[in-house]
Amino acid sequence: MPDYLIAHAQSQPNKPAVIDDRPDGSVRTLNWKQLNEETNRLAHVLIETGHAQAGNKVLWCGQNSIGVVVMIGAARKLGVTAVPLNYRLSDDESAYVTDHCDATVVFVDADNAATFERIRTQIPKVKSILVYGGKAPDGMLSADDLMAAASTDEPVISDSLAPGATMIYTSGTTGKPKGALRTSPASAEQGIALVRLLGSQPSDIYMTTGPIYHSGPGGFMATGLAMGQTIVVQRKFDPLDWLRLVDKYKVTSTFSAPTPIRMVCNLPAEVKAKYDVTSMKRMVANAAPWSMTLKHMYLESFPHDSLYEIYGSTELGVNCVLLPEDQLRKPGSCGKPSPLVDIKLFDDDGNEVTGIGPEHTGELFVSSPSVFADYYKQHDKYEADQKHGYQTVGDIAYRDSEGYIYICDRKKDMIISAGMNIYPAEIEGVLENHPDIYETAVFGIPSEEWGETVHAVVVKRPGSSLTEDQINAHAREFLASYKVPRSLSWSDELPKTGSGKILKRDLRAPYWAGRASQV
Image (cartoon, rainbow, N blue to C red):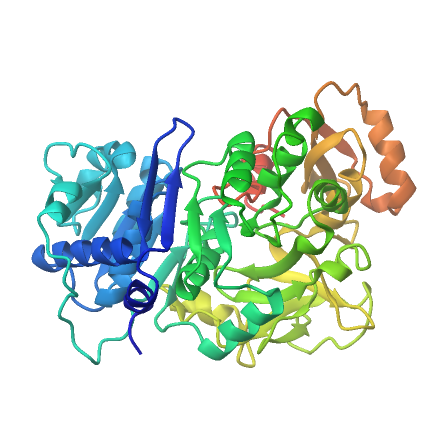
């Protein structure tokens, strides 16, 4: 079958393919014919610079832009492995990922080129650094200039060449980032079944809510491109600008972590009223669990049949889907297994957990065509996360009597206090139901008496006079006594990864400093 860019360029050449509309008033739009031509130009640049051999790694880094979309398409056409880099990483983290993935070329936004100037000596395998969207520093190449002189013809490649692989490095919330390698294209059968379940259409207008380097926004954008949708790329999330784009382009579809939508929903009512959001048909919620409070806030402003929740991961793909009609009926659930996904729960001894209810928890394992191929150069970690041919990312879950899945927590986040297993996500869900709590993070801190005790970091809503006693009273109303936080601290903001996950490791670190064991 032809590459989908070629197919759409031929069948709908003048339809907008990708729109980059920025708050400063600058707008750049490529139709499908132009997007295919720009992709071909970059493919020829990669060939001419000697970085187009199948299996080569091309690392890209930058905020959301048309350049990123073009890079992803060029890598796929050439059969090279595209490796996105989180531009929010520190220099040491950026150098680690770039060197660990064996990238020979870096494609970087001009706004982020300084990072690679600083780490140049730490990435000796990189032979070329291509800078797009602005001036290239000394020692780097201007991708813009090279592409302007390159051919728009389809690159000549072997008919037997497989589409490019992808390798996304995990966010590192539980340790050093790991490269989740996918060496083959997604299952067409599974992809079509998921698209049908979500009701996605070629006529959809998809907008990126969050960075494309993350598997959620990037993966759903890739699906939209494959279907021939129009993609609106928001360079950097801003809640007011997000509403502007939804209204202006009549956005019908997006994927979002809870944090961005919480920011949108917390805007003053008179501000939200200025924008029409009734076009939204598919708000796909994930990256971190959405609390019931946030779901209610969303449904107050957006169409009631638009909220879908999925459970998935960089490594395992989309594993569960909770449909709009179940959002309020099944609080706390992430839904039923998505098409062609088989889920099993195993206890620590490798025995399958078949019981029903929260007293029958087990580590969730998945078998499906969307499971990744390996952790790059860390096969031992890949094998360690397997049982009976099923793969896990360490989440704890249980089922209800209708087969709906409930994620209790990540296995590594579990607190053991006086021999009792405590799952922070349950406590966080209760605390975030308090009207004066904006968000919270719960984790275990060391205790000589109990082993660990429950600690909560709380962010108040603006203007709140909430006290610790009020939080304790609220928690005791909904939680068993041993789950109520024994200590509490306040924060103006919780540290997060670029994908919106709370960095509990950073919050826990001061409490466990100097100890050989972290649990």
